[in-house]
Length: 480
Image (cartoon, rainbow, N blue to C red; front, top):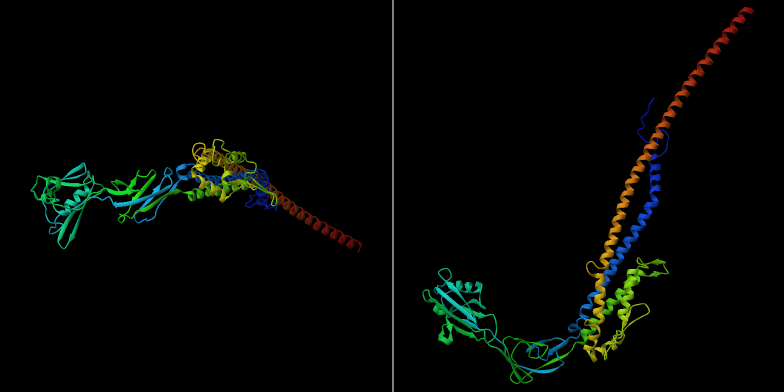
């Protein structure tokens, strides 16, 4: 007799699913726990190095100004009357005061035609040659563009336009073509001549040297004329460089007669102090980050995710060496960060004595820049050192790639473990189901035998009773 078990546990009464699940979980537990611990540790390290990288990038960004002496040792340039001019200065400018007077600004030439009925009125055909300074171009005017509107559009779209923009002004007197130079300066005068065609373009000619004045000059091309400390100077443009070393003037308007304004060039100590303070703040952020990642909190008995990590320990040691160095090559002026008032405290972070730093900058911004900037400057050394970690393919990239590879391997091991446990679970289930089927068959055999035995026992008892009764009756009958 065969029996098919359609539900586990029918024969034995056991919860086979729970038993198999428990056995499978127990078998996988050691490897599962080990993989989970490794994954947790690696994930924490990935996050920790990301935190370190962010702090490092913030710190490195503050070095750009410090390692460039032209940015750190910068100069200020201010004018007493900013409606006359403004100014900027580079680190090469010399501190001092200058008297500035502007006679006239540089201007661009502007020419205007006589008014005609409208912008769409025909002017004429032929070739217009427009020259600005020593550059000229010729444009063809025919029946498709022989109006003021067409001529202006053709001038503006000319691929070799020498530096003229054309527009139309329409007033009660009529429409006028206006030619304006795009560059200021006496050398940029505009000349217009015509040739060929029907002769109508003669109305647009302007060449005073050859007696052609059909256009009206509304503004001459002029150089700016001004004086510095009473000495005359001129410029083709209103942005003037090279007159005062390291200073660029932006002329805005002419001064009143004999009423100069004062230009003051000074050291930008405030800008330098801000840059250095920003550097110290970022440095402290980096130090705090390293301490948090590598430290141990005795109160909470909690270790940082990178406790004992040699990469960060090595980084901090080298960082400390650069920050604490004394530049013996600087004969005068501050030769260390401590000389600028920047010192480390017992927590490993740095504080700044603003008075000491301010005095150093006031005494000589250039001396401070010498300590921090240039090939051997502290900021330059720091940037070179940090770049080894932050650059593409650098130490942090290498570490990150290694951690990600390890996480990928763990994920693969977890997948393999899951697959093996699925096979193990299926094997156990089959074995328990086979046992359950065998138990069910045994129970059925037991039930069958019990029923058979009970049936046979009942039949034997009934036969014996009937025989005894018969014998008794016979005896009694005979005796009677």
